[in-house]
Amino acid sequence: MEKINVIKVGGKIVEDSLEEFLCSFSTVEGKKALVHGGGRTATALAAKLGIETRMVGGRRITDKEMLDVVTMVYGGLVNKNIVAGLQARGINAIGLTGADMDIIRSDKRPVKDVDYGYVGDVKAVRGDMLAALIESGATPVVAPLTHDGKGSMLNTNADTIAATVAKGLVGRYEVTLTYCFEMPGVLSDPEDPSSVIPVITPESFEKLTAEGIVSGGMIPKIENALDAVRCGVAKVVITKADNLGGGTVIRL
View (spheres, helix red, strand yellow):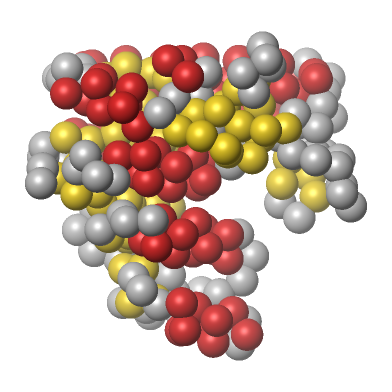
């Protein structure tokens, strides 16, 4: 089965070292897809527009005004800058949100303890549409936006989007999913970049979480990674953007 790399890059890298990342991404051989964030850019634009950013547990509250901002930033500014940068490097990229070709549809998150507003929980992915683009020679660049099928866009976690894209391509390709962020992998000591944990399994993840070694935003990232592996993704890696061959491997 033909291989494909699905690579997710966080907003901090997109905003601080995009050129370096695009150079690294352009060297990845074979078929590939990119998923990106861009939260800090959205927060900055919202401030310029006088729109307050509200966060709960690291998650953005997306009211109607903020939905307009993230749609502009994720689906427009950030996405098209990445596409243009890849075109300059000879990669025939196409920018997408979940609404384009109906590739990712979500339900608006129900209100429980917190009303997150226009935030989507993924319910369906059109892997056939993504594969058709990829087989045509295009490299999808997917923004962290989905839609509800009723005319509304929904803000959706970029790590979840990446796992969804990877799972949607299972059965058509041998999929490797890579989460890129600022560190060379999941660290046992946050102050020591050389303390990369080489492999994390469900059992070790439970232990690392209980001991507080893995915490904060890394917990949902690894949960997404484990879910992807359970759904047939061949390999999930968490690593630094300029170290796409190394990092922490997530496996069962």
